[in-house]
Length: 436
Image (cartoon, rainbow, N blue to C red):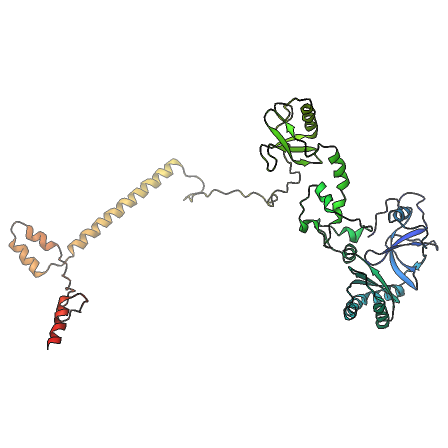
C-alpha cells in the first residue's frame, strides 16, 4: 500500500502531516506535532479514540498533501496526532492483539448465525492496544445488529465498532494475485471504487465472457475502466459503423476495427466476413467523401497503400521453449580399420585378395565333406544282390541310393474303426441288434 515518494530528494520537502497505514487497506493521516524524524517504514504509535493504535509510516513530505486531495479528505475532519515511535513494549502488545483476530472472527460468525442475522463478518481488526476491535461485515439488506454489539462486547470484553463493506473492499482486505500476475489493485493502491459496466468492455471490443470479466470479488474488474476513456476518444475520430462504402467492385460493410492502430476492416457481407479489406481511417473517410459526390472508386484499397501488412516481429524471441537449447550435430560413424588412419590402395588390394583366397578354401572344404558323407552310406544285402544281377549298371545306381523305410498305415481295421455319424456300416450293425 506504500506509494513511491518521488519528491523525497527535493529540498524544502517538509509537511507536518504523515500518512500511516494499518492492517490491509485501512489508512489515516496524522499530524507530526512532535516533529519526529520519520521515514517511510517506521512504526509509530498514533492517537485513537480511545487509547492508541500502532501503524506504519507510508508517506511523508509534500506528497502527502496531494494524497489527501486524491482521497477527497474533508477539510473539517479532525486530524489526530502521532505520539511517538513504537517501542518494543508497544510492538509486543500489538502482536498479541493481532493474534486474537482470527479466533474472534470465527466466534463472531457463529454468534451472528445464532442471532439469525443475514450478514457475513469478513474480517476483524484489533486496535494496537487491544481495547477495541473493528468488525467488517457484508450484507445485502439493512441489518439491525444492536443485539450483536452487546453480545460481542460482553464475550470479548472490548469496544466494538461495525463497518459495512462491499465485495470489492472485502477482496482488497483479503488480497490476492490477479490474472495479470500482479497483486490486486484494490489491495495495493486503489481507495475509491467506481462502478464498472459492460459498456466499457464493448468500447474496447472485449469478449463479454463473465468468467473473463469478473474478478476475485465476483464483480466486474476495476481495470476495465482504466483505458476506456482513451478508446472512447479514439472511436469518436472514426467513421460510424452503420456507414457502408460503395465501389465499382461491390458494397462494403463495417466488420471490425483496431481502434489504437486506426485500421478498419470491411466485408462484402453484413453478417459474416467475405472478401474482407483492411484500410486506414483516412482512406475510409476519403471513400465516404467520394460516395457523397456520387463517385464510386474502382477498389476500396488505395493503390499506393502496401498490400501486405506489417509482419509481427518477435523481439523477445519467445515463440519456442527450445530457443536456448544447443543444436546437437550428428557425428558420422567411422568404419573400423586394421591399421591406424586410412588404408592405401595397395593395402586394400592385398586385403581383397586375402578375402577371396579364404572364400575359395571354404568352398573346397565343403565339397570334400560332401563326398565323404556319400561314401559312408551302408548298403543292405538286397541292394548288393540287385547290384550284381544288373549288367547294364542300373543296379549299381539303385544300390547306391538309400531307400526310405515305409511308414505304417494309419488306417485301422474294421473292428477297431470308430463309428461315424453318417456311416452305413454303423447303421447296419444297429439294425441287426434290434432284430435280435
